[in-house]
Image 1 (cartoon, each protein chain N blue to C red):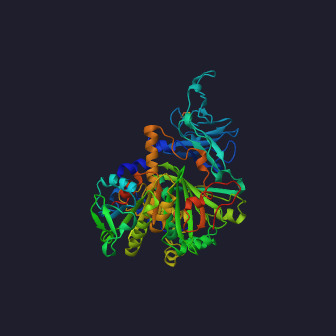
Image 2: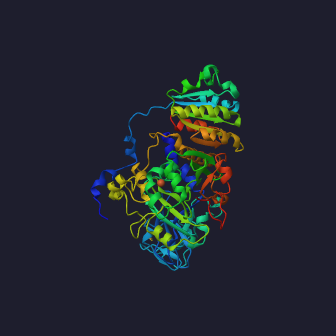
Image 3: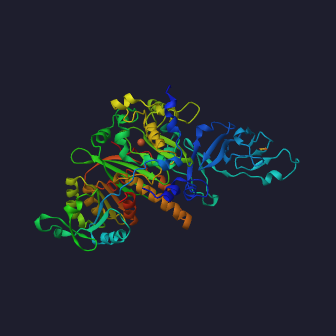
Length: 428
Length: 165
Ligand code: FES
Ligand SMILES: [Fe+2]
C-alpha cells in the first residue's frame, strides 16, 4: 500500500518532478540504434520522460536528440529534411544541427547573426551496443558513459528489442523484480519456450511453487533472491539484480543467453520496455537470434515497422482460452513479454497503489519503492547523487545457483552476481 | 491475426482517473505480531510501536532457555514488559515479523518459526546491521519466508505500513 502522494511521486517523471529529476541523473536508452540506420536517414520522434524530442543522424554521422518543435513557430521537426549537416524545418526552412543550434534562417539577411542566437534544447545521443543512449540532466553533472555488460559484449553476442507498453513505467518495472509471479504466469514458457526450456533449474522452479525470498541491498539497488528446494537438502537460488532506477535482469537458465530489461518512461501513462539477451562467452546461435527476432523469450513479436506488439490491448492480446484451459499458457496469452504487458496494462495506465494488498512475498517491490522515494527526495533536498549513476554499479549479473543451506546467497554468490568479462554466468 | 476487437472496447476505455473507482471493497488491516529477538532489536521495536497501528502487536523474545515457560508454553514479553504466551498470540495472526541484530536469537527464531509453520502463519525476518550479521541471517533463514538483511532501521516501519497492519 502506498499513500496517494507517494504513488504520484514515484509515477510522475516529467520535467521538474522529483522522480523526473532522478531519472535525469542517468544515461537512459533513448532508442535502438537500428532506428537511425545510416547517415542522413529520416529523423524519428521520441517522447522520453514526458518531453517530446526528435532524434536524427546527420549526413556526417553525428547523432542528435533535440526538441521536437521548431523554434520559429512550433512545427514538428519530424517533418524535417535531413540535409547536409543538419535538419531543416520544411515550413520556412530554419535548419538545426545535432546540438540544436540553428544554422540557417533563410528569411534573414545573408550575413545575419540571428541564427546564432537560436538554439533548441538538446541532449547527447551516444551509440553503445545496440542502443542509442541519452542523458537528459544538467550537463554539469553528466556521468561517465554506461557500462552494462549486454551493451559492451561484441555485437554477435547480444540482441536487444523494444516494445511500447501502455502503462506507467513503475508497474512495468515492478514485474521485473517480482519473482513470485514466474511460477504462475510464465509456467507454460518454462517447458516450451526455445530460449528457456531444458534447464535443470526449471524443474526446481516448477516443483516448488512457494519460494522463500531474501531481499538484500546492493551498491546500485537490490538483489532479490528467490530460494527453492533442490536435492540433497540444498537450495536453488534465483538472484535478480535491480540497479536504480529501472534496470533489471532475469536469472539465467542453463546455458541459454541471459536477459534483462530497461523500463523507460515515455510519459506517465506509457513506457518503453527494452529487452536484451546476451551471452558473455559465445556468439548467439542463428537459431537463438531468430527465436529472439520472432518474439520468443523476453522479446515480443511487433507489428512490422513499429514497436507495438502484435498482441496488444486492441485485440485482447489474442487471448486463447483453450490454451489457458490446457495450461499451455497459464493466462491464455502467448509469450512471456505479452503475458506481462497484458496483465500490467490491465491494471490501468497508473495503478492506484492505495488499494493494493501487499503480502510479505512482495517485499522486493516494497523495498524498491522505498529506495526510489528516498533517493528522489535525497536528490531534491540535499543534492545527493543516487545509486546506479556510477558505472561501477552497472557491473552486475543475475545468477541461478545451487547452494548448501547454511550459505547466505549473497556471500556464496557474491562473485556470481558481478560481471567477469569473458567468463560464463553462474547458471543451472 | 483476426480477433474480435469489439470485445476489448471496455478494457481500452481505461483512464488513470478511473482507477479511483476500482477495488472499492473495504480493506481490513491485518494482524501482525512483531518480535524482537535481542535487546538492540527491541530498541527499534519500541520506536516503531509508538506509531499508530491497527493490527500490530510488539514483543520481545527472551534470549536463552528462559523462553520456555511452565507447561511447555513458549513465553514472550510484550514491549511494555507484560508476559505473553506465544501460542495465544499466534491465534488470529496473519504474519509474524521477527527482528534481529545478532545471532543470539537463533533459539527464539526456531521456536517462533516452528509454531508459525504449524499454524500456517506467514513469517518475515528483518536483520538490522551493516551486513556483517551473517550468523543472524543464517539463524533466521530457515524460519522466515521473507528475509530482509538491511542497514536501514526504517525498513521495519516501511514493511509494516506496506502490509497494512
Ligand atoms: S516553423 Fe519551422 S521554419 Fe517556420
Ligand atoms: Fe514476467
